[in-house]
Amino acid sequence: MGTKYLIDTNAVIEFLSGAVPESGSKWLQDIVDEDLHHLSVINQIELLGFNGSPTEMQTLEEFINVSTVLPLSDVVVQKTIDLRKNHTIKLPDAIIAATSLTYQLTLVTRNTIDFQKIEGLDCVNPHKQ
Image (cartoon, rainbow, N blue to C red; front, side, top):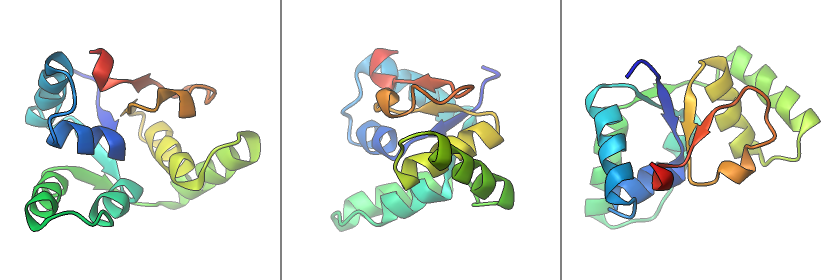
């Protein structure tokens, strides 16, 4: 696997909770095992802003700790602004898309429809792997 990935918040939650089908779960596990996965800082905020049980929160923190969390750099900010000007897209999704584009990462998300009009952004739904 040479492709690197940014895993969206919904995909992380579904993966960790066992809601992704077996083939998609194995595919994601391989990505994690081979250290090919990243998170946007917005994913970190969304995941840790979840009000889960202590066990759920520990699982999320452990996943974040083994992930590369990409910052909100000036380049990502400018790309986010460009995306918001040219697409009807929520701010968190624009940040996630801009991060994926800036770092040339394939976005792993169940919500591929939210990102389908963004030119150059590759998306993969783990439920269809």
